[in-house]
Amino acid sequence: MRTADVGGVAVPVDHLIGGEWVGSSETFETRSPLDWDAGALADVARGDQATADQAVSAAVAGFAEWGSWPAAKRAGVMRRMADLIESRTDEIAIVESLDMAFLLRSMKARLVGRGALNFRLYADLIEAAEERDWPAKNMRNVVQRMPAGPAVVITPWNAPFMLSTWKLAPALAAGNSVIHKPAEWSPLSAALLAELTLEAGFPPGAYNLVQGIGEEVGAALVADDRIRRITFTGSPETARHIGRSAADNIVPFGAELGGKGPLVVFADADLDAAAHRAAWQFDDSGQVCLAGTRILVDVSIREPFLEAFHRHADAMVLGDSRQDETDIAPMVHPDHRDNVHAFVERARAAGDTIVRGGTKAPDSLHYEPTLIEPASNDSEVVQSEIFGPVLTFQTFDDEAEAIEMANSTAYGLSAIVFTTSAERAERVGRALRCGLVWVNTFLVRDLTAPFGGCGISGIGREGGDHALEFHSDLKTLMILDDSVSPDQP
Image (cartoon, rainbow, N blue to C red; front, top):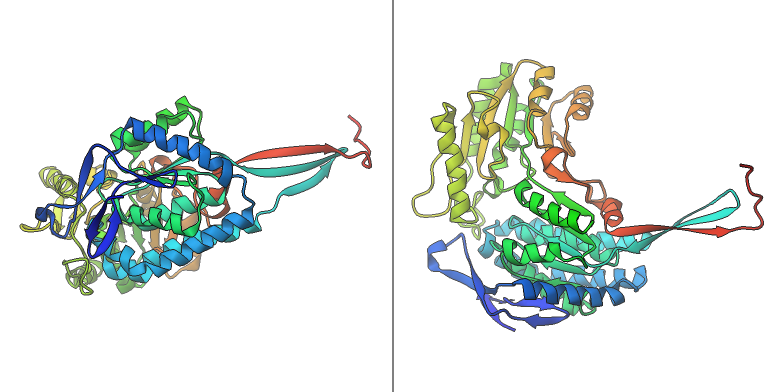
């Protein structure tokens, strides 16, 4: 097994297939956004068609064992996994901070623990799951939840560790074997996760890690007709390609995709709280699909809101993700930063007003927190996901116009509403077309609640029993009961 020293942590850089570390003839490099010009952080195995075939074969074999285990036995392994994640919090945090530039303090305080919680949650849910059993006519009907089979789990480059556990835990709890394909821009924390599966006691082939480029090994994985579930988080463009492969093999496909969430502030809101939360949409350099990137404010509070927003944004510190005082770390990759800047430049050329920011840092991958007042609701920066520290600012005259503007994009992942009126919160919350609405808060969620998007923001729902249902096949067992008189036709 090859390893790389990443912040003092020995990180495997090969694939994990059938319980063994497996290399490739080619590699790809991952660099740290904190010091891009320093060269490779690690050279990672670059999977190909043969790697994909080997991984699927291992998952088929692994499913035969893991899928046959009773729920309580699977739950025990998953709880050990959660304990192991917590025991290596510092190592996971520093690796992700270097590989993706996620804030180290946030990794330690929230995200690694959330990863452990995901495994514990699904251990509890699978143990508590009960078969539905009822009489009808002269039959006893029993609904059995069966593991679906090998699943491909493709995870994104933003918050990769936590989002990997979010997808892997329900697939494994349901009894499926998995092939995990992490994003090539931030592959290293997934390798630590793979290492922990061996220690936790997952049987060989229950969890498999395949590293590589999406268009190469990822495409080969989703096209394999032995795969019975595909779950993906990423862009709508990539989802369209995966969806075609899933359709060819008639495989259920779940996708959590982009967002262009509105942050709606009514005149009766706690203005400072709303402005503070709006400024914090720059968190993680805006690389958050759930972010409220379209700020919509009642026209009557336009100026005081902007004053408060700028005050909070000015207080945010750009810096190294390992430093406690840093609020905004560098962006993940030069290509992504340049793509974000291209949005801003097109907006400038189209006549949109750059209220603040709009520039690249000269000697790092930082991008200045940017606010744009568009000339029209049809502006590209309003209608397209930018996925960077770029927000738009618009005003509305009344509640009806606020709802219309909020629902005016092809996306529908999340929304944020600030109001002190319980009636308005209920009314507007119900009117917004999206998968999740926060009122006077953000990123606080019951993990058993459904999660997903409308429109091009996704297909299906994750979270709680919704994810277990996706990863299962249901079977109705009907048994003749001679003690029950049949109903008359």
